[in-house]
Image 1 (spheres, rainbow, N blue to C red):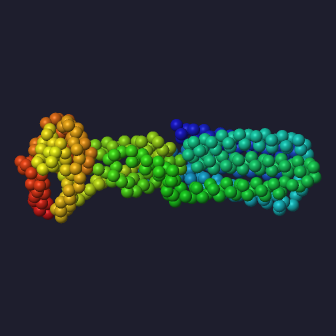
Image 2: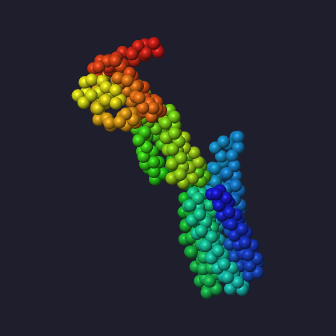
Image 3: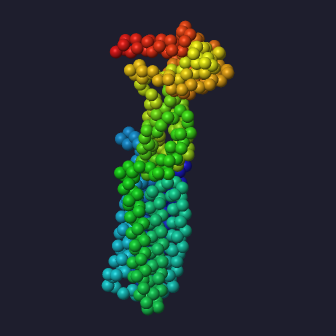
Length: 395
C-alpha cells in the first residue's frame, strides 16, 4: 500500500516537471527571456531528479538472492544525488545573478510573468502535499523531491521579481537570488546529511527507542533490556533486541516474544523486521520454591500449603533464603503464581492433582520435586544433594 502510494507521488512529480519544462522552454523562446530560459533548464534538472526518484522507489522494493535484505537504501542514495542537484541549482542561480554578462531583453513580459505565476502556484501546491505524504510514508526520496520542487517554487518567485525589476528598471533580482540560494543550500545539506547517515546505518531516533522500551516492559516476562539496536534503510526500519527474560517454558517464551515483535511492528511506523535474541535471567544456580505451612517449618502439598519460601542456590551450592510469599487458596492459583516467578524447582509433598496446574508448570519449565521429608531444611538439602550428584555426573 505504502509502496504504491510512493510510486504515485514520484510519477506525479515526473509529470509536473515535464509540463513545467515544456511550457517554460516554449515561452522562453517566445518572449526572449533569458531568466525564463534559465528556469526552463532548472526545471529540466528537476525532471531528471524526478526520474531518479521514480526509478529508485521502484527498485527499492525489489529483493533478490544477492540482496536478501532488499534494496531499500537505493532511496537514500537517490536522496544524496538529489541533494547534489540542489547544490548545483543554488550555484546556477548565484552564477546567473552575479556573473551573467548578458543583459535581459524581454518582450511580452506579461506572458513570461503569467507562465512563472502558473509554475509558482503549481510547484507550491504539489511540494506541500508531497512533503506531507513523505512524512506520513517516511520516505526520504519523496521528501528530497518535495524539497527540490519547493526550491523550484522559490526560484520561480526570484524570476518574477527579476522580471518586474527589469520592467521597472531596478535590477534587484540578483539579491533575492542570493537569499533563496542559501535556503536551497540549507535544504540540500539536510537531505545530504540524513541520506549519508542512513547509508552508514545511523541508529534509530530516541523517540522510537523509548517507544520500543515501553512496549517491551509491558510484558512481565521481561527482566531487563540488554540492548536495542536499529537502523533505517530507505523508508524502513530494522530492529535488533537483546532481552533478559524470566525462565518460562520454551513454547510460552517463544509465543510472548512473537507478541512483542508484532506489537512493535504495529505501533512503530515502517518496521520491516524485528530480531529478538533472548536469554534466561538466571543461567547459573538454582531457584527453589518450597511449599510450607503457616510457620514455614513443615513441607506441604499444593492443596494444604499456605506459603512458599523462595530459596536461591548458587553454583557453588551456597544457600540464600530470599523471601516468602503467601499462596492463593486454590491449587491452580498456586501453580499459576509460581510459574511466573522464575522458579526452577517446586518442592512439595506431592505433585499437583489438577491437570491445568500441571500444564501451566510444564509450560513454564518448572520441575515439581516430590519429597518425603517433612522439615523445610531437610527438603532443601535433599534437592541440593541430588543436584550435586547430577553436576558431578555431567562433568
